[in-house]
Length: 242
Image 1 (cartoon, rainbow, N blue to C red):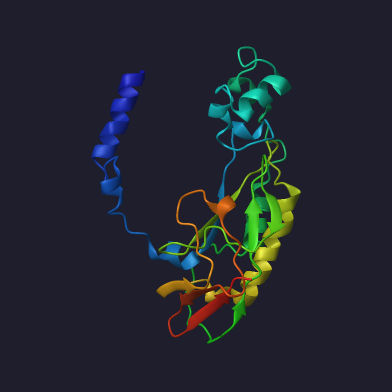
Image 2 (image 1 turned 135 degrees about the vertical axis):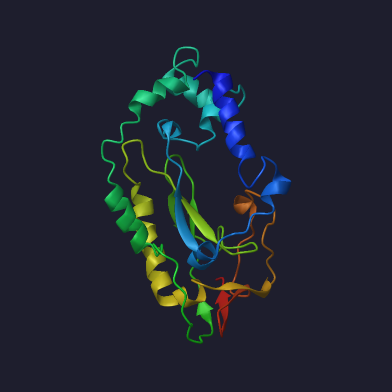
């Protein structure tokens, strides 16, 4: 199939679907209840861009842009882009140690629900959250404790956590270590998370959450004076952020 025929086929599928390729159309999408209930999940960034071992999924474009650190790093480490381009990483993505069953078990231990479950929660108060943040450093993520959250904000308060495996299919040790910690916290306090919905107000306290995209690195740390709220079927949960 030539390129034009292939693109025409894609356009035909889009035209026959419920959405158009524009934001106004996508704004009409309704998030399914199971997604709102699950609250915490894992998504994977894994591809050829894992091969350089630095940066993130933007490496492929930035390595060709003069003036970026990726451009300089690539030329110094792998040689000029004209001799060693992005395509030359492809044979090195071996996935030789990929073990999907191990991934699934790790994510289960982290508190990811295979199926969203709803139940009437017990009434609790004063839930204290030792916030765990994951800072991306090269392939994978670097785990660290921090006084600020990532992702558990916004209209539906859902956190899809990014995990970046190595080229050989293994998950970096910092992630292996922190994911079960998240699961331990959720097993104790999950009733304030799973199956809940935003309350009348998002939260309160002196520190304001950054509203713009990709602003986590500029977020002022939250303290115990910051409290976020979630609502269950018959309970209101207060989560201290420090």
